[in-house]
Image (cartoon, rainbow over all chains, first blue to last red; front, side, top):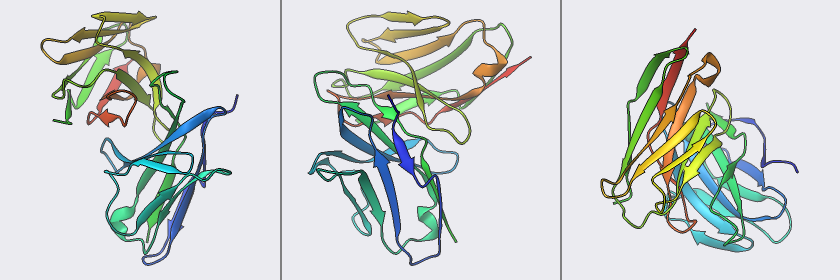
Length: 115
Length: 111
């Protein structure tokens, strides 16, 4: 059973470009969470999605950031017009359908560098 | 009310010693408290987790102690090994929703 997969693992963008981060949850998991980790800091929640639904986006910046989890395919975190402050590690986590459990399993992350 | 405060920020322990990391939370609605271990360049990996209906949970060398009245929980690593050197994060969530993380503790175990 493969774990949570994220790609790309490293992404370099110039200011003003778009970044698209992909996350494939563990098999059988229908809940996806995105977290951001700034250098030398803890993880901060961004958004919680189920298939075709955004459940909680209270941690998402109001502009330039969006997320989706379509019926088919991976979850996508999209950052438009990136700025240097977006440089961080972005982690995706997945969990099974409730009430199977609360455990969130994390992927290896995408490290975004904005030049 | 969503904060989780973690201490110490860094910890140095000798091989074979006990590592203790503490966390405190504010939101009494939290009902799930996991600890994650993260190595440089890797994603967080679940180490052990507890719910507030028990005061202690042990898995191998790792033990969580939970004090509901004080709203505190801690991770104890017995017989610490150099391979345990990593960053440890406590977290809390309510009914399977988003995790609120502590700021992390960088543990170094000297050989």
